[in-house]
Image 1 (cartoon, rainbow, N blue to C red):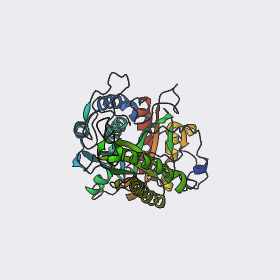
Image 2 (cartoon, one colour; image 1 turned 30 degrees about the vertical axis):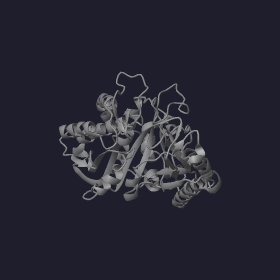
Image 3 (tube, rainbow, N blue to C red; image 1 turned 60 degrees about the horizontal axis):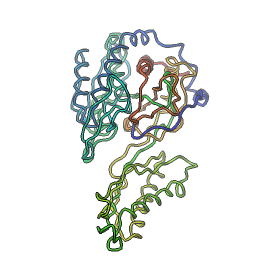
Image 4 (cartoon, one colour; image 1 turned 120 degrees about the vertical axis):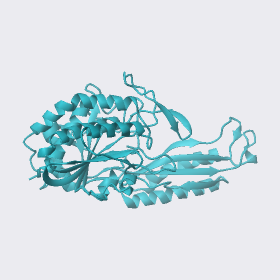
Length: 444
């Protein structure tokens, strides 16, 4: 995910809308016995892997150790993982003993430039360089959990592959949080490097642990689920002068402040948010180095979130217009890159596939613990896969009992804390979805 997800999503909605659809009939009779048995066998290992990955996090496009650990375990299972895809990505295919469908399961592996503030015996002490600065590194989004869950699913599927219909591609993806400047990475590079060249799944599934749901709950939604995300950068050039004589130069700091203020009207006054929500956020501003010197330039970076392509393009145009003309009003000059690279599309859950697999989620968590998510302004590069094949992405509650998910530290927070019971729930949910799909389970 690409932002702190602090919005409260504790909606105890049943899937009344989905249940009304022809494809979303009654839930499966219950959790598959083989799911419960397999989960029990790998539960301790999944926790151990997760704690190891958590203690040794790596930033996007730098997941060398994590990738090596994944490869090592897959080879122990007798698989032949393909390595080096999108730098540190790992892909392996489990061949079932019976004919059947082809599907893919994805887990992301990268961490964030966040200094951990959670008191755990396996808390991260790692540091790295990010945007030219030394930063702490933490699995503040939960990708350590995703990688560990998929390793557990690999164990389970290999153990039953003699009776398994079809094939399952395991995708361990780097750089979901976004590649460093001037680098490619993530799902788009996986596809560019030929992920689906020789193996095109008919369906793909992914999950994400989520702080704003309590442990034990699952969340999903048909159609648009998570926003498109785009980054922008704006450089405002003025003219350096002494702080005691601002009239002798052009102050880019004041111009930048005016640009930020004026940009707030793009969503509040120019975007029809009655149609769908949108966000323009400035995330960082950098300019100057001394208290009494007005600098030559100021650089700002931020993010845009949308659910509609027309709104997306209109906001790009409006932000460029604001940056350039407000800067000119101050006698400064703006160099704007909006967006500054290809962003993530909307994460879209195929309606028919989601309706079909909804009973599988309910079989694991129970009807009352599977909720319909509202639109989520966070973004996911799983969206690239969903543009290629029918896909479903769902959330796994991660906040421990007794803590209000609406106020719990969010994903991307230095205080983000995963309740480890979510590992078991996520593993069982994904395994149930996998086996139900491969065995041809249908909604009525």
